Length: 173
Image (cartoon, rainbow, N blue to C red; front, side):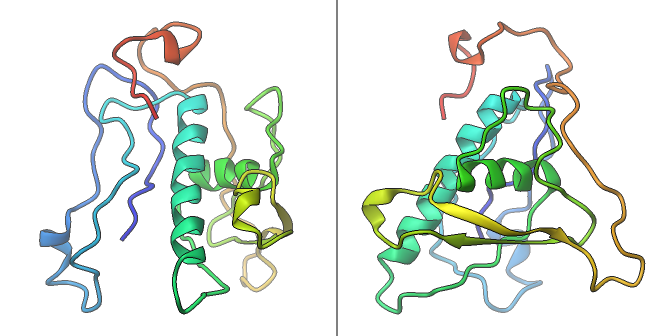
């Protein structure tokens, strides 16, 4: 269970969090009881730049873990929310638009995106080392593309500094 999680804009209240292992274990047979989540979103939300940093850190962790796995897995399936998927596409391809509201990586309900690694050299890192071969493909769905989503501003509910990293209370990802 990797809780790279949903994106919630900054707020003065705490957003909901995913259930913990104790809650999920009776419902699912094959959860790794030794796994510890390491890339949690800030409880009071985050700005888009913070989301991208968190997703980059999570993807670095995932790919490094798989590269170091003696079984050398070649495929990983990530099921996530739209904002996180868009950030993942940008991190993996290294294509971060100047305006984060740019509609670059598509996110439709049950869309399938496929990213292929350019070089399997762990020294290359994750960011920019992937090509996007499928961008929220939906042709296998009877209704096709539905409920597309894209960023629309920072979606914050409170005012924060222009650069969230200047805010002493902001999450340091």
